Image (cartoon, rainbow over all chains, first blue to last red; front, side):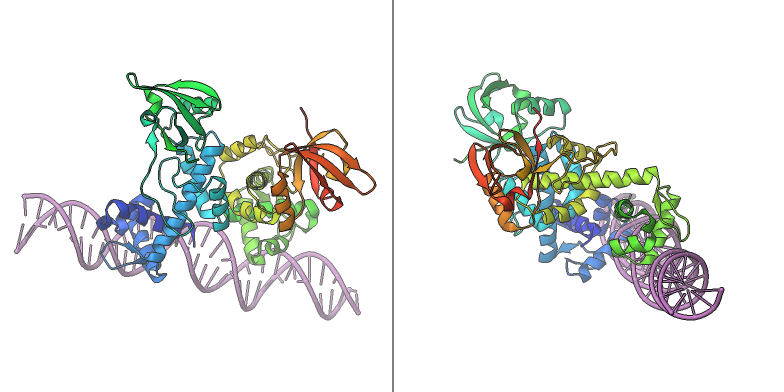
Length: 220
Length: 220
DNA sequence: AAATTAATTTAAGTAAGCTTAAATATATTT
DNA sequence: AAATATATTTAAGCTTACTTAAATTAATTT
């Protein structure tokens, strides 16, 4: 299937989660930056391919097949985000931009290799759930802000919710990377600071940081 | 520029290295799996974009701009091959197939991140040179077969020239990966076996292996 | 050198994915 | 409920990247 089709079903899937009554051609058109006419045309075409149900003037509804396609694209997008975020010093915005292109040129085989390499993560660096190869999706995000962690426990970094270069520079410098493990050595509840052990270095993070770094409990 | 255009200049660049007189539309058409007519059309179009010189019935010649574009695509292709080969257990054939698609959807920024991550390698896992960001290309391959290495020296694995699953399984098991470092502990010149230290494990490789594993001298 | 073969080019046509403009239906306001 | 505004649809047309078939040129054989 083409890039245009993949983006179309993805846009419907995402829009539908917010307001399924408003998933009409015009709405999808706006999100994709195409004309209403083009969206109507595409809707008809995809209906004939059994990817969605189309009735004049009604909201578009993905079929099971269409939903599966959307989830497959979203899976690839989020796996790429997770991989790029782990490997390189790139912001959430940058990884999103790259993943938006790579998602359409990734075989299922490669997606599985990426997932495997990352330890089959259930969430991407934004905290959004990554569908598995069967299109199943975990909806409960168990990650918590660093400020809510407990002394003595070990966690895996699951999100770095920022787009500021200085933040990422700081993270890079201190080994704060998606997928890395940290241990909480002290919680200063008064002034909201957190002392952590990362790669055997002890660092203290203030509220600005502990609120935007998210982690999951490590399961050993 | 489109995927079709990128593949067209890439095909010309590659063909030209073998026989520059034979870089005519029909030849490129065959390599790309399109008709001669389509190739002639494209040649005219690219001439108007200043990517190549086109004269009726003559061989196609890339301009500097066209050459630069071809090298940029080739750079991305080979960087992807190097990255996928390093990270995942994929054969040379598999990484090639994936890189063929990813190369067109990769920003220069991301290409630079990949290169940086890999330590700006000059050759990909096939042993083909990786152009740098300025389109400069190293033509002298300094890598040698493991059978030609010297006792006591340390090398970086630069190629694993095989497409057989068993070989890659063996490599994965023993940490023989593109980019990894090994030390030659003994050379058995008679029966062409080589003893190496990899990740502090000592293993012995026979001729079947030492002829298809290529390495570069490590520069510390 | 003429005849034959092969390649290139031109011409006409197609499908995908868009566009704008006009027609039509739906929603909203009064 | 009628008038107005908004959204959707239809229609016609464009560009890209192809196709096949016919015409032309180049290369090869005899």
